[in-house]
Length: 80
Image 1 (cartoon, one colour):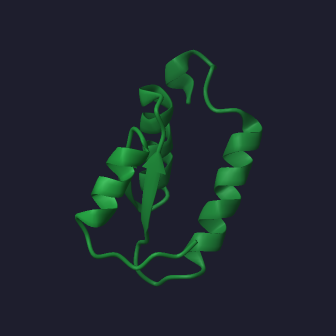
Image 2 (cartoon, rainbow, N blue to C red):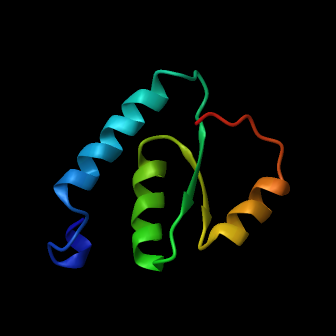
């Protein structure tokens, strides 16, 4: 996250995200699809990059309406 002059994601956020990735990677043999819903474009971009760098496929939406539209346009297996 050096691109932001040292103002990247907080350690706690990265730690929680890392735990999520570990959990998800143990549940599926293929790359899971992860939806990122974030209204801040920079935070969304950084989170999508983290997800994709971890080997996941990322869908991104800027708000709930966009997220619902994305979900309605695909057939997916949903795990919460």
